[in-house]
Length: 291
Image (cartoon, rainbow, N blue to C red; front, side, top):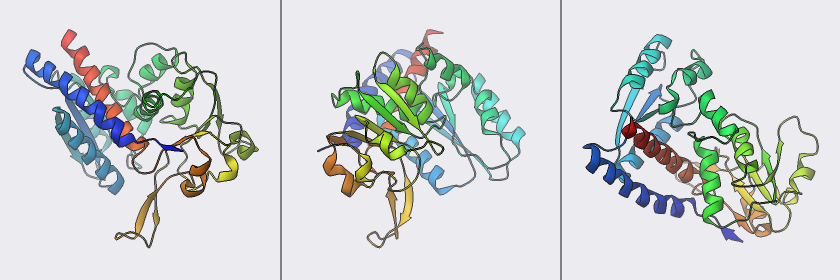
């Protein structure tokens, strides 16, 4: 079994991004600029956005964090999005999800200029990705494909089973894995699928993104499979100072011994999601220069 080290791969890619960011700064007088809008004070979102800002600093990007209160009005958020859309010095921006209940997340996503949608959630980017046109790809699916390629894992002709059909991970990932760059045969299973365990046992590559701690057990994984765990759930633990531990969808201790490759949680997919966002921002900056 070989552990897939997302931190290591992300660090290598960040070095490449850093060089390109410096070249853009030397050419244009400013570095690529990523902005983030954070509504409310959800601890998970707060932590994730802070990581993104630190990532920007690490690779030499400029960054801006715009905060709104939990009870902010829809119009307030819409005005900020409109301002960022029209600001030539902002190459890309994100609205951190999930949003408080008064917001329609899909409407918010559709208000973002597709050319600045570095999360890759806008329907125009999703549509372009679906027919394999150049676009901003969703960060987590993009990060996973990069990981598989970096580790030289054969995907062509392999059966890839994806657990979860969300618009953020499962659905776009199923498209990317089936396209010519990856050439996998893809099955998507979800809460209404019958015989999930049986289907998973046929997977050469098993990717789970459902947020259900230790859902994937050893009897669901065939010998020699590649297992990619996207799940991140905080569960109680008496082994940590905080009393909580970040846990994936896979029962790692019992599944790992059956795998050829497996991602840990944390340190697997998470760092690659963030580095994919940096790559999208770099791409947005390069496109902005050409305008």
